[in-house]
Image 1: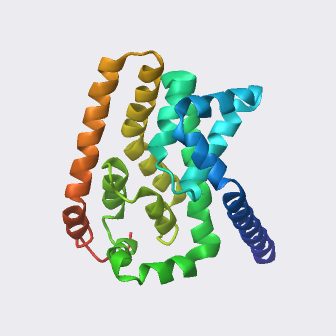
Image 2: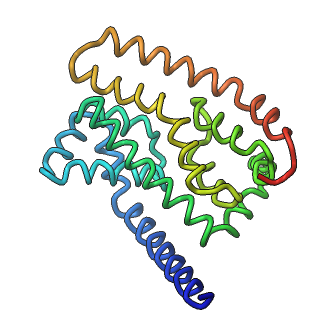
Length: 233
């Protein structure tokens, strides 16, 4: 039984390592082209639609790529999702891509990249994250960071893989925390396409205010939450 479990774990680690190499290669080769596509929402839409019935799968791949590695704000693809597919399908495709990308990042750290993440967290600017790992309020901390705009969300997905949090609980927190703002971004894209500019401006202003407040109070929130407790999750 233990031998079978060890073999399965080895297969998972090898698969994640190969996936990591593949992502690096794809990033080097295609990142400039991806960045060029994201400059124009109409250009991005034309590209997605040119792939025919594979359009939703290609769009989801873009969202996965953004979550795992690309230095592109997630809002770019969320707005594009609403512009291309509308609020309902745009939200579904964006959520699917976000969760798949988050799964790759989470399990990569948990099974393979833990030592790299620990070395990264030793740097002064990331030391506040070390207190998160053994914090009894880990769930509160994660929800706050996923919900409040302007927080380092993608990096926290990798960090969560180092903690003892159960995967199902983590992905539930991620989904609930990010869903409201994700829907807001998708709605902006949908309203832009429908030329409903009044509603677009209202949602955009609310989102922008949330983002600014998140940036202004980020350090205060980090200091408060990171000192809540030291016992394990």
